[in-house]
Length: 553
Ligand SMILES: Nc1nc2c(c(=O)[nH]1)N[C@H]1C(S)=C(S)[C@@H](COP(=O)(O)OP(=O)(O)OC[C@H]3O[C@@H](n4cnc5c(=O)[nH]c(N)nc54)[C@H](O)[C@@H]3O)O[C@H]1N2
Ligand SMILES: Nc1nc2c(c(=O)[nH]1)N[C@H]1C(S)=C(S)[C@@H](COP(=O)(O)OP(=O)(O)OC[C@H]3O[C@@H](n4cnc5c(=O)[nH]c(N)nc54)[C@H](O)[C@@H]3O)O[C@H]1N2
Ligand SMILES: [Mo]
Image (cartoon, rainbow, N blue to C red; front, side):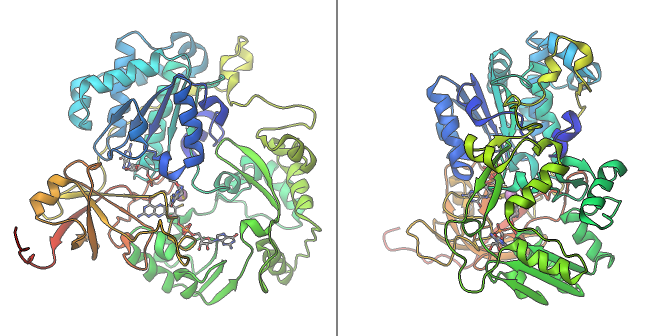
């Protein structure tokens, strides 16, 4: 969100799902949508059936890559090098969109100078991708009439996450692939409502509707409505909170719907910090590992199918959700628990229904003003922005940048000079393997919601290793090995996997009770967005015992 907000002023994907189905070129960059966003991937496949060329940029030959016209298997953390190389190739081949660059963007000169050293040869050496493949992606993307650039954590879970995103935005600006039907930039969101959470102000520097906390005019609107004084300074993001606990500046935390004891990088350290708090409150639908550390647990808040309200997806579409089943036992809606707490703190906020809360939001957040419950139901969801009840805005954002009238273009979109930087932790002779972590189709995050029932799909944690590394280490499929990083070690079975290149190993974070992957990950993060470098740690694999010779071997 930070990268998009920096360039365009709004932290949301610029296109709609329907546009993906009509694009000529689709690039999945650091996204394994086949496994992590299967619904979105259906739209991608529809696009492919309609003739789109699909490129996948990922260190692993993922399930998504199996459907691609071309897979670009880059070295972990070399995305800026790749983007800068593509940009230079587009510029030198005369394929840049000169008219859009002139009318809709700024800072092109500085940017074009900065990518000058990134010849195909240099780019190929740094990324590990053959020069010809880089050239092919560059030409296809630049020549396409419409193109979609989609990314997720392969881009954002790095210490230079924001620069990585800016590097991708540069390519869209260079080719005019933003601000018009069919072309756009799509960061795919993690949860069904993570976009909505941000839109509603669950960010340390934003009020609902992306209004700045530090904007006095915006903030006092909320002061008035809520009858209290909203703190006038930006708060801390998750990573900054953990740093503040370490400095003993933050002494209590209220966690709602998150399991940081198992999802934070460098897990042993994170648990130690949670234990050091004076007061920890957890509100969750399950008794998580974080809840077990808490002083107070609010159990049984309602899950999404038991509650009434809205969710907002990756294409900024606000949709109604309705209670499908009654709350079990004494479970209560999250909002009711929060309202009770507010009352104890002296604020008797009365809302008769989720619609009343929504209408209050509409009165405070201009980008939601036109979305009444009635209209949301009639239209099956509405994308933001939607300023008035009698109008719909285009399905894509930033069309102003193409306006024939220069006075209507607003702030032009700046190119960003971005510098290639390797991951914080280099591989060394002691820790010679690059560990990257991520997801599998049949499990979800820390497993809280996907364990605990019988499923034929579910399998436990493994460390996925290339056939070459397995042979070198003399480890067999399913053999339990010891994996160590500078922060800790664990034992896990090997899975020999052809999708990995030598030197790269992969684990998920889905089975932390069995194998706590985050004992290995590094506590480095992007100072601008706070995202941790989950995608790059250095590890070693040791055999636990001498293998017994097998008869006949
Ligand atoms: N089945 C399932 N679906 C999920 C989730 C789940 O747990 N399970 N979680 C949800 C959540 S919270 C999120 S945020 C999303 C995440 O969705 P994704 O981001 O698609 O999932 P990941 O597997 O974490 O990472 C994506 C890819 O990044 C690649 N990658 C690693 N390092 C690099 C790099 O340096 N450069 C590039 N270009 N790529 C790299 C990995 O190989 C991986 O294939 O998924 C959501 N959907
Ligand atoms: N190694 C490694 N670690 C990672 C990542 C990675 O790629 N690699 N990815 C990171 C990312 S992108 C993410 S998003 C995090 C995810 O990390 P978390 O968000 O900490 O993990 P979840 O398992 O999704 O936890 C969600 C919690 O919300 C609860 N919950 C669900 N519905 C409701 C509800 O309606 N009300 C309430 N009160 N609670 C509810 C669930 O029971 C669960 O305990 O992990 C991060 N950690
Ligand atoms: Mo996520």
